[in-house]
Length: 329
Ligand code: ZN
Image 1 (cartoon, rainbow, N blue to C red):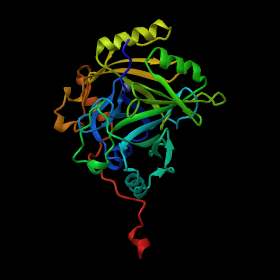
Image 2 (cartoon, protein in one colour):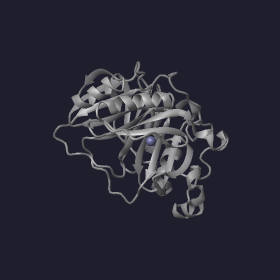
Image 3 (cartoon, helix red, strand yellow):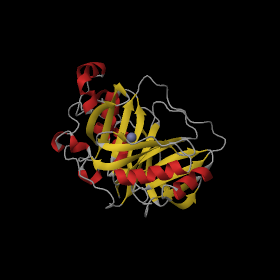
Image 4 (cartoon, protein in one colour):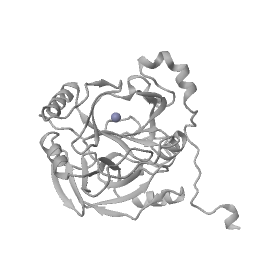
């Protein structure tokens, strides 16, 4: 079986939608490439941030479920999403994030890469990872981003998960999904697809004494992995079913086709096809500007539009970490 080819998208749970948009588009400078609703809960937005073209592997998406309690850290959850930034750009990012009052940690070295951990406004753990450009996924710069092209986020880098039993999840990753166990550093074991690098890493920590984690605002909902097409997806789905897990049937998400399943430790995974992509229902130049609904929800458009808050895009965000005029006086 051909292995997965990398991360396709990561979906997380946010608080209020405008705050989420302000942070990811206004401060991190990603492009809102699709504004839709949760297909299983059409009273809530589903916001997609990516490179300018919405290439598979660049996409971080959110369900703004502000009524939810904050997430509970624990095993069986993906606990951090990592985004690739160009080599030498972390000083820029550290300074920019401080200026906007974002909570950032100290720069760390992980598996040889320089990493800047931070928390988004709703507590999601995000890490910016410096890495060289790769050819395993496309990247198109967003010329209207507030972040200069040379510093822009290149796409998803990887994710961290906590597992009660690393061996069970590790066996599944390597024997069924085609990962390779690379090495362990501190408490983290790195699994890679292909040669590893941007978009192809998953770091697993065994936390036998932790509670079971719980979804809430600030948690990752699922990790979606790339498959070439529906034939590849069905092949991987069959391998997952053969070992006794229960993948869903193929679900048409319109921009890609999806299969969902929980890996042995309980983390929700998805398989998602590379195509047809976000330009299937909007012109590439106008991605994300209007509320897009899949065809089967179009008849409910008026009610859906009344049920979600209006959003300002592009967002207007002001630096907050620099001294105000009154402080200068
Ligand atoms: Zn998904």
